Image (cartoon, rainbow, N blue to C red; front, side, top):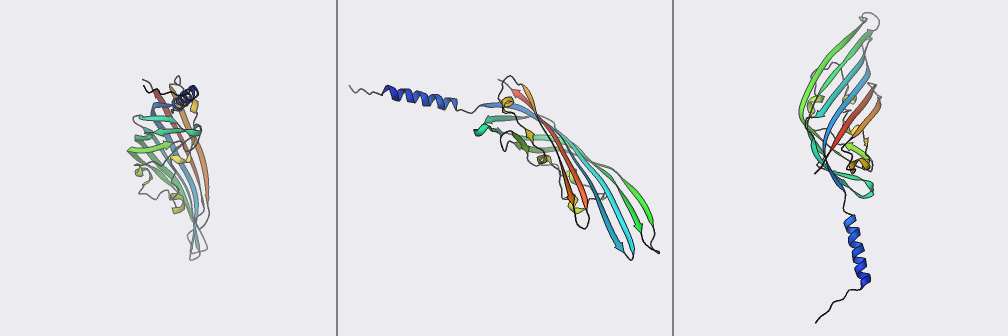
Length: 234
């Protein structure tokens, strides 16, 4: 008869390690997630042109705003990661729809000695609207306690306008206000608390850019968004 024996100390150690391995399994929770957001861009600029003794100055003011929301929630899974971080899987929100409006005004003045015509006039640019459907965006937690978005996809129409009124000089047009501008605080205790059935993450950020050069200007961007997490049980 062959008898195998294992020292009691080793048995206790194996039980200890087994308990640690079991306890180390990541906590996880599933949610239905929806998004609402407002993206705003305001700009001003001054263009000065001189020809044959006449000086033409254009002062422009423009505003662009987009409001968007998910039409149906997306199922997202949150998993506890090392260092107190949260890892999200399936965090690509789809079925996003919304509309953008652009408006503004331009004041043009001409000065100079005769034969220059001296005049001043203001052109008000009517509101131009663009709507979209079927856009998507992903979000994640790049570091502990933070939620951040990637760029909005499938919504090119909100940046495409045929009219040049209000004018948007190239340096200003290159500033593309988008969701990643704002981050939001993430409270891990909300994520994994079974009794918290619904919770929110909100981001709100403003950024000012001063443009120097041939056509000086100023751009003020503001991004506000809210993610709503509804816990899925069972």
